[in-house]
Length: 274
Length: 299
Ligand SMILES: Nc1ncnc2c1ncn2[C@@H]1O[C@H](COP(=O)(O)OP(=O)(O)O)[C@@H](O)[C@H]1O
Ligand SMILES: [Mg+2]
Image 1: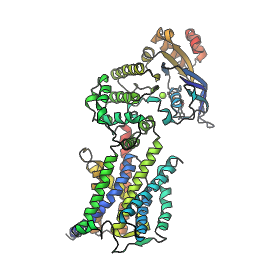
Image 2 (image 1 turned 45 degrees about the vertical axis):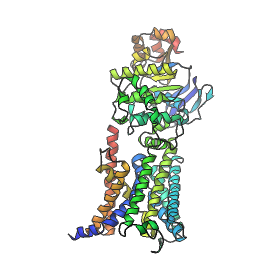
Image 3 (image 1 turned 90 degrees about the vertical axis):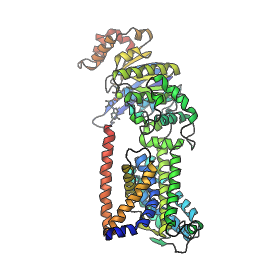
Image 4 (image 1 turned 90 degrees about the horizontal axis):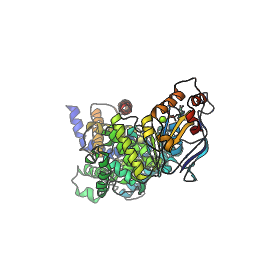
């Protein structure tokens, strides 16, 4: 279980551009829950993930993982249990190392990083087994540099390396946004499969409202650092993309509208948000 | 033709020096091309290696033991820079400058307070007055021993980069995020890189001290530039070639750099003018480095 309790985060404190993004922000995510997170640019989605992963400290409040407050834990320590994929496919793997070296590196995550050989030849078949289901032919190009792969191939490789050793949480920040529609589809299918197979507790940011509805078992919409929509189960399944789009537009583009007015316009969402 | 005659007469010495400086260049390869860290510590750790070797030799230590101590001293210097940068969050260039400046004083101390220490001709060094040097034909013995050392260092480094920790170091230079995602502290990996690099640089200083039988307090000036020039020459010469290892490229680069300097001297360039050439070269390298960064950004 992952909980954020009373999180407060202000950027540019005591400057002219002070932004109070989170004020008493609370969120609880159950084990093996797959949350898709939507919201306009600047609504605080990435910051939320940064606080969970420890890339950014919160000003107040705590991040609690399985009942234990991990607010003081460094990012690299939290990474033992968290796999993270970014929007930029280049961030997840080492461009100057080969596919095989990248897989070996990830495989060594739980081992001692001593002076044994970086690549274990006995593991190569296993790596190929991991790559084969992707259907991208990566298993036949183990000696290609990761930097020479296309965005989609590289993101797929990053998905494999991030989930290769057991992790409990998967954090995805617009991980298909830099890919063409076809490739995005492939990666999304892979994501869904990996999450189910491994039973990962997942938060996925996406700007694709169709994916947000189709994938995952809980949907959260954020606006200006607040959760304005939170649906799961039946409620989520019956939701139509059009409704979601309307709400999204109400919050973001009809500028004179406050969230109250938007909810007044869409009373069916009011209960879920509160 | 006088120029060429002079150049060729100096060629054996040029190659010797190139091979000795190659050890230093391989160290700088780690910080600059792998970690992307402009490490000015080397201007202090190179003479540090020479100071340690000179003073230990003069107290009768075995030449190889002297070199080991030099490398260890260099490792400590690298550790200092790494800790200053990572733990105190001082910028990379300044961390190096701080340690380099401190080392100037420390080197003088190690050398017994004098800016110049010489080792007698009769002393046993790795190059002279030892069983290996005695069996090798006169004239090639120094080159052969310098080559042997450069090769040993090269093979050790090549091996290191295929180990688990070697992978981690390569990852740290290319994409720090991956190191974090592997649940490792990227700061520690950076420190380890600086330790290894400065050990090599100081080792190179110790070797040069044995070859020239000399420690001089100002011998470190321009070490970083010299090493960078070697690395950049070597790497660019073999750009796109996967057959020749980085370490080999850097060794060849160091020899070519020394050949360029030797040629300039043969042309009648005064040592004072050489510094101007060096600074122009540094500018070129930095400008080229900026372009490299831009390329990366748009890649
Ligand atoms: N490091 C930072 N420094 C200053 N402001 C920041 C920083 N990171 C995010 N912000 C601000 O916080 C807000 C939310 O940003 P972010 O979490 O990236 O939004 P999202 O991912 O939803 O698009 C934005 O207004 C942004 O300007
Ligand atoms: Mg974002």
